[in-house]
Length: 487
Image (cartoon, rainbow, N blue to C red; front, side, top):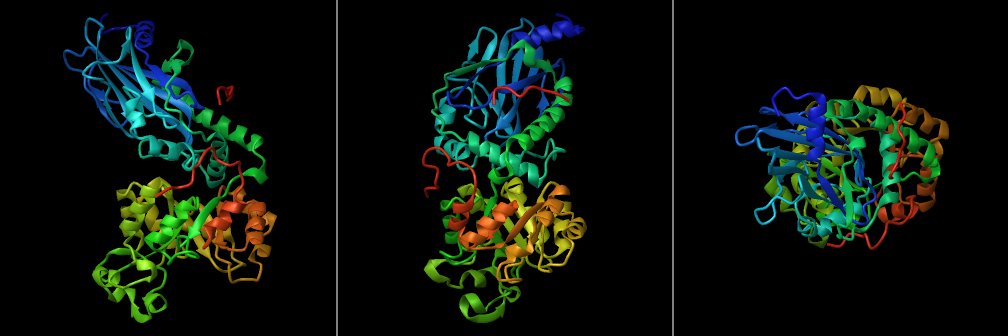
């Protein structure tokens, strides 16, 4: 073949080397489209953050961008396989994507092939590509957690490469979470389901890139029609951790919240005298330790010497976020005062928690600061006034959620919310997270009103009211018009 390949010749070349994907026999999803790009010379990938190197003996590199409508954690997934061929059109190297990076596909020094087609094994639910099943079985506990308790946790996926899809909103995230909780499954780690890339789903990348937004819109429309309002899940947010059962804002409270099945843990952020973000609600230590000294006057070392019940301590924000990541629970961070936004945002990015965190505050300017550091971060504006216009507040803060902090506003603060109020907020693509509530009847009333999340000192109470079918197996924590098919 010569450098001046026709489109027909390019497609024939792409068809000749399409990967064969082996999936878990319980895998609920399959690829819907595969976009290909043929590299004749070195250059940046069009759909992945890397450069493709084409130097002898490499003659061509074929990039396959494999689109799955669903990952078990979120709506839309794009994985990749790169096939390197020499001038004799022999496969000399294969690479594939793996949780945001990529690696070479070899087993005992050999490339797994069936004829000219590379063989890859898709991680159950998540679809990261491996050259053998053993790569996945070594991560079995993490994969099972992702496919069960964490099903739907990501909502509509966004990342630094693709940014925020136009369909993403708190409402759509909630639809996605509900749908994917129903798809939760326990992997068998038997990779018996063979998926061949058939010609009818193979298209040039640029064509596929144009189709993706339409597919997302179709899915959102489908979910809106298919999922009854009363069955939508809500975010169960453990207020200062499981603070009814453990010292608030401590590692133990975070661990208990995760063990009870909470989606997120609410934590309060302040800064020490030496500039370290810590997790503590009050501005002083009077309530926690009987000392009226202000947090700002103490260094981190002094703060962490303060003893708390049950052998606990006041954690740094870095420690708390790292623990959330370890336990696979999201973070709902309340920025208590000026000077917390930028350090907190940087730590969230550093710990890989950007897309698993919601920043909240009574101070609109702090939420705007967060967005300057993390443009795709989700934020919530807190307010106590029952007469305030939530839409104006959200606009001032560029917030994604509104959070009425009405726990002391009335004996039954849920009576202050009306269906019309909720619908008006939702009509502006905003979500609603409510005050901490421990009474089961009030929690049920809030869920019935359609709020998107509820905070509680008792996440066990929230879990009793959380809608949706039970997850399979034992999932509690220990220590334009397209036919929608195949889902």
